[in-house]
Length: 430
Image 1: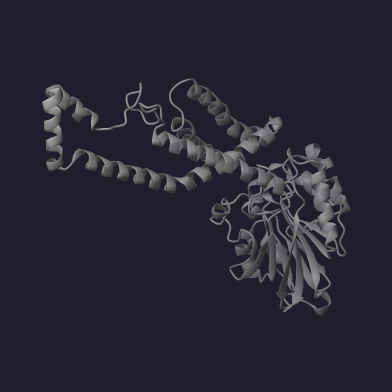
Image 2 (image 1 turned 60 degrees about the horizontal axis):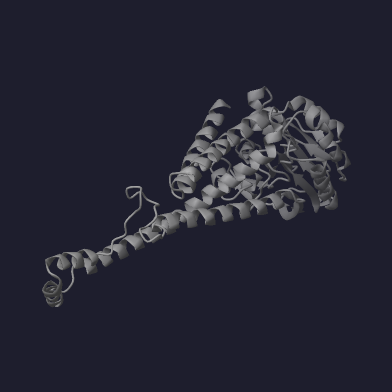
């Protein structure tokens, strides 16, 4: 955990250094405006780590909204400015090329044409006129008062081209980041979309053909969610008329004492053959055993490295892979060993990565969450480095794995490119 915090702080520090350079140093001359901006930057610089540490520890929950919104805005400022680096470089190279071309023309006039002009000037105005005419013939840009610093005013009151370019890029990046963040907030706080998929299973009994599984993950009840968040998700689950409901972890970001009332609407989940639950990594950060008891009291059956037989179909569930650090590891042998292999088995496991451990047991389908579909594109590209499937249907060591985007959000209340989901999987005879 300390290593994770250290990496996060390092990333934040490097991000701030880059944003400071592009948004303050490059756009403002030394003076009052830069000093004020420096003060604001220091406050914002402390806001991100204070939010990540303080809110998660439960001491600074009032920072959740401003802190997480700033983190999202900072992320999209970074992405926007990095995307502008190539066109910025192209424009600067174009300007340099034009400047060199202009200087070549000005400093190398035709000698034959210039001699009569100089002779005429000398005859009428004397030697000093020649010198003055020669000086006036070189229209160089000069800077005022700062010794030629980048981003200064020109002699005629104009703005240095580099300053103009930096300010234009900063304004564009700011508007882009604000627009994307606003769109992401609206998406994240709206009702989950229903994602429907049909998956054939070779050993599925005819009586189970067409069985619908409502798969939901990553509800993340926490400091930014109210009871309305849980009520919206429950309504969507009930609207799909599911045979089985599979809640595949990361239900909460806090203790039962803090968030128990927000989970209460889950008591109203409806299904023909029951609702089942497995732990995610966030349950272990929040006190997993009280939540397991609470979930059972709400009417969902926790599958703790175990399986149940439902009309010829095995539904198995394993603890999250992160449970090992808390003395509650995943046990695939206990959940999947010594079973009747003529029956198909659907495995509930929070992380897609678990399929690598499940593969030797002949799992027919694994349903997972954890990735949030990347939550904030292009962050999904980094998630791919840690999980074999980010969103949708994939295959891991021969095991079909379906990963739902999750119904909530973690950290910033922002979703871009990965809308909240409740996935309906219809099992069909292959």
